[in-house]
Amino acid sequence: MNVDLRVFVYALIFFAAGILLFIQGFRNLREKRLIENTPTSKIEGLAMGLVEVFGKAKPFQEKIHKSPFTNTDCVYYRYTIEEYRSSGKSGHYVTIDEQRTSDPFFVQDETGKVLVNPEGAEINKPDKTVFKTNSSGEPSELIQDFIKGRGISYKGTFGFNKDMIFTEYLIEPEDSIFVMGTAGDNPFAPKDGIDHEDNILIQRGKYEKFFLISDSNEKAVLKQLGWRSSGFIIGGAALSLASLAGILLYLGAFG
Amino acid sequence: MTLGTTIWFSFFALFLIGGILVYLVMLFNSIIQLKNQIKKSWSNIDVLLKQRSDMLPNLIAVVKGYAKYEKEVINSVINARKALLSATTLSDKAVASDSISKSLTTIFGWVENYPQLKANENFLRLQQEISQIEDEIADRRELFNDSVTLYNNQITTFPGIIFAKILKYTPEALFQISQEEKETVNVSLSEQ
Image 1 (tube, rainbow over the protein chains, first blue to last red):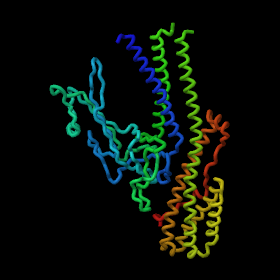
Image 2 (tube, each protein chain N blue to C red):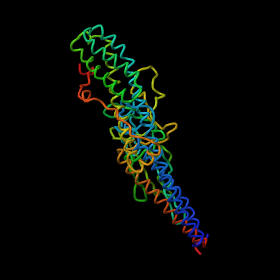
Image 3 (cartoon, each protein chain N blue to C red):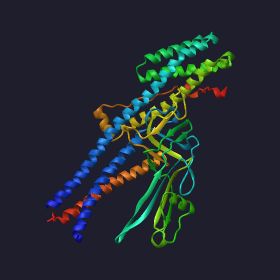
Image 4 (tube, rainbow over the protein chains, first blue to last red):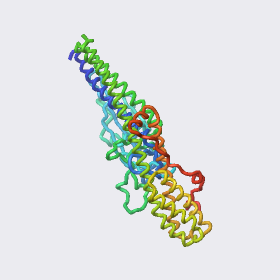
């Protein structure tokens, strides 16, 4: 492929990427509006449907997880293991293993607590810890044991360490969290007519798919979504228009 | 103007006009969503008001036997309940609900004057359940008022005011509580 044609193909890709970013920006703007338009509920008076609550994370049935890379007590974790793959002169990190817990946990405010099922939630900004391995760095024993159990080796050809990134995201007990999702009857709660603390469950809705768990407060979430949406809308449009100029230039449409 | 320039400016206009149109549609939907949020918040309070009303006849039946000379308060509960059940507007319901809450606070305070009430299991159970509902009503009232404030702010500021005029939407009233109710002490079992 000659240089001009490669630039043309890149311009086409960037043009499409710009449009996707532009659309994503409006999706984020819609999410921002949804959060703005939904007042924060007190858990005691929680009603069914789309709700927004803010409180502290608490374990359900004393179920505490140990995070895989730091052995930290948590109610939720997600981890990713990425490995550097080179192709020709360039290279990039590829996710080779990823897992998240799906056990429910409570969120508690001054009026009560409600169960949250994190399955399908967008988990925003939980505590993050990153470890890297390369030719000069060894992973901790904990990481070594964990990845061995997952059938992953950090040793490459001739026994050299691979270039890898281990990232762990946590929600620890007592972390302040913001949850926006759909509240409904907990299908797993005992049906004995007694008011159990796990009778109501916040989860991803059947109709309203927006489900966010964040360790920031509402104001910070809105600020983040505001920046992201305007960045994507303006950046996406600018990227598309710049790429379009490149495409038209290649096609000689400017005369 | 070359073909390339025309195409480029067409896309520029497409992004600009498309962006503005999508924004306006979102704003329109946002106002509708806020209006629906108010309806939903009100329905959530209404359910609890109905639930509390259903418990009142039982409560009156229990206290009548002990507090024979407190007819005035008992009658005010009966009348406020009737008013609540027949009310059609939000403000009428708010007034009736307010009146019930005040009377209930008085009735729950009788345990000091009528020690037999303190020992009555039915009374204690009803007191606990009604107090729980009262707390939930207070929380949901707060949520309702937040929803109304968000809606009122949206439809009285630019550019939402334009859509509000088109849709003929007017500001909604808050679910107010009386000053006396604000000052009353919530009686609960733990305090006895």
